[in-house]
Structures are given as structure tokens and as C-alpha cells.
Image (cartoon, rainbow, N blue to C red; front, side, top):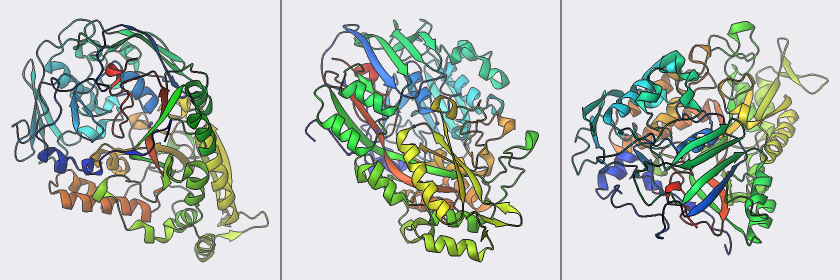
Length: 586
């Protein structure tokens, strides 16, 4: 696992928010529970609205954010399960029931960045009416930190030394060393707090079997009334939500399925949806639908979302339990010259122009870390692996001894350059695949295209999923928090997805490089903003030069549509699109 007249385009989240240590230390006025207004500024009463219709063409399959691998699942869970604070549009924390966002200035963060103290607003309750306490927060840390829980968020706990309940409403988070990303625990889309009473018997190996995975108890504005996995979630108002005037809508229908184009039509043409997510549709179609719509509005928000192609370093066809395991080696992508040739035969500029409108919904990039100010590399534009150059790709393969046969496919030592290239079922991605196939085959690869339903692709349970990555290449999009440390840990050797962790860790490529690991270890303790930016650039450049990943498009994080009658929707490039749903109204 995660977009004019009638159209607002290009809302760019502040690049200054890319480094938390730089922004939060200088921002004593971070939004608190008491000061956060309704996003629309409008007055409304709880339950005055009818049913809010949300359409995600990728259907949710699980509602526990710490077992989910897709945006569809995280967003569907967010109506119920909340972090202590969200990342707002400027990348700074916004409270979800916290008395005050901790900072260095107010004493909540120690001057040496080794601990953070969070204070809950007294009287907070879970949706079942029981008290929400520090013990639930401590439990959530224990749950994620247990390797046998196989949470995809395990990397975010790597530097956390302890989470302690000082009292029922006070939590102290201690880090193993000075932690510049001191909001790593408890803030943002992957930090939802679980109810200890509901999940205490389902920690570790039993985590996947918890009934709460499908019907969690939470602190959000809604509760799950019915969930047909892979289809639709029905929600009712949380009777114990902390704000007695919210939410406005009495019920929510979170429908999954279909495709991006039909989702766009539902909000712009028919009005069947109040909100349609991730409208990854060709520019001509989205222009036609949105610009002429009397029913819906398109919005975009850039964050750090990058459409990318991952390269497999393990053998996806090894026999038995060895399949895709890091102990195996890919038959030809182990040769860096083959990876380099593939990158040099990749035409991202055409993809950006024809499928993303050259900035309407995305821009060509050769950085895996994009949209993050000084932490974004300026070196990659000059790299040969970032330039579309079929002649150079052919020479790279010729020099490495990969010879074209009569069928046009290169081979060496009896091994042919035959790849399976998988992604989700989506017209933009299928057209991207077609562009890649044409160019890669022109230099001597044989390319088999594979399209997988998103409900299958973004799971750790199916062999056709992104986590297993039992293919040679796979394409999807992902993004970082305002501080990208946890995101970049996704290519370290400590976080390789494999059978032993139920394929639920983040390094799907099974890449291992001690030099890269060292840089990420430095990032986890370096507190100087300039040095951190330099380390991020170094990490990015290693991945690009080593062709571990081929970035294609810096996409708008949100490219969605909503009804012209819907108010309170605030585009946000750094958190779930559902981050402010308690404020939505008509």
C-alpha cells in the first residue's frame, strides 16, 4: 500500500515541512484540540446530514491500520481508528484529542530530542464508552513493536526505546538516541491507536485473526456498523465522539470497486458519489469531466507521492519455500548493467505528458524522494540512468555480453531477459505498461504484462500481491511522512519482506546494501537539519544509481473529486484524505 473555474489544481503542501526538526522546533503555535476550528468554518449540528457516499475504486479489505498494506484500507479505518495527531496540510501536527501538541518550546519535547510527553484531554472515550487512557497507547507501541505481529509499521518503532504511562492521561515516549523525527510515534496515517481491551489477546502471531481487524473500536467520528470485505463499509456516528457537535453526517457508505473513470463520472456527472478518491485518469478525460461539471469539483494536493517501478533482487521463481526469499538471487537483475539498461530504456517524459498532463496530476521525476525541499536530490538529472537513451541501453547490454537472438530477446549463459511486469488494474497504469513494454523490448527484453486487482495487489496474503512480489518488476505509488526516515527505511536489509514476517515488512525488492543501511542508521540519530537533508539526498542517490527502483512520476498525493454541496474538505498532501472527515458537512 496510497489526488480553474470549476477545478482547483496544484495545491502544494509546504516544502518547509519536509524536515520536522526544522519546522516543529520553530512552531510553538501548533494547532491544539481547543484551537482547531471546523475546516469549513461553518456551524452545523451533529447528525443533521443523511448518508455521506464515499467511493474508492479500490475496495477495503481490512480496517486495522497496523495490518493494512494499502491506502484504501488505511483510509477506511481512519473514520474509526485515529493517531494522537494528524499531519496537517503544512506538514505540522493537528490534535486528535491531545491537550497540546508537544514542542521544545512548551517543554513537551526535551531539548536533546530523546523524549516526548503527550497529554490527553481528560474524559476521552472509546466508541464503546470505556475510557481512552495512556495504557491503550502503550499497548499500541507493544503491538507494533512485536516482530511476530508482522505489522508493516514495524520500522517506525525501530528507534523507540519505550512508551510509558506516566498516569492515565500522560504518555512519555523515549527514543534510544536523539531523535530528530520525534513525531515518529503517534502522528500521521500509520500511527492509529488501538484499544488494548479489543486487541490484547491478538498480539504477535494471532494478530491476523483478530475480529477487531474487521470491526475496530476507535476514537474517530464513526463506528463500523457493517463491513463486507472487498466491497463496502457502513458506518454510524460514534456516540462517544469527543466533539458533541460532530460529525454532521448520520451515516457513511464507503463503497469500493469499479475503476477510476467510473468513480470520476460518479462525482462529476451523475452525482452518485459525494467523494471519489484517486482519480488516476488520463488528462483529456479528467479535463472533460471536471471542467464541465455542475455537480463536482476536482482537487489536487502534492506531497511526496511517487509512482515507481521496483526491481526484484531475489529469485521470484525459486522452488518451494525459497521463492522470492532474500537468500536467493535474481537470474539477471543481479547484474547491475541489466538494471542500468532497463532504466535507460525508460521513457518517463512520455508517460508524464500523455498520462499525467505534464503537471495536472503528476510530473516526471527520477527521485524516489520528491516534494521534500532540500532533502530532494538535485543530482539525479545528470545521471545516465535517469535519461531516456535507447542507444546507451543497447550498448550497456552489448558490453555486458547480453546478445540478441533471432527473436530479438537478449540472452547470456542460457538465461534470457524475460520479465514479468505487474501492477494494479487501472487504465493509466496499463497504458504506462504499454509504453514501457515497447521501449524495453526495443533494446532486447521480453516483457509479459500482468494486471492484478487492487484488492489483491495491496495485501500481504496473496501470492499476486505487491508484498510477495513474485514477479521481476512491479509498479505502484507510495509516499513518505513530512520526515522521510521511516519511508527510506523501506530499502534497508533489516526490513526485507519475506515468509518469516508474513511478507508484511516494507523492502519488497529484497535489496541489501551495507552502505545504504549505514546512511539510514545515521539519519535515525542526526539532529542537524542540513546534515539530515544531505543524508536523504545520499540515500536517494544510492537507490537511483543502483537501479533498485525506477521512479516515474511525482504524483499529486490527492487527485480526488467531491460534490459541490460538500463543505469542509481540506486537501492534504501528508496524511489520509479522511483526516478531517469529522468536519465535512453540507
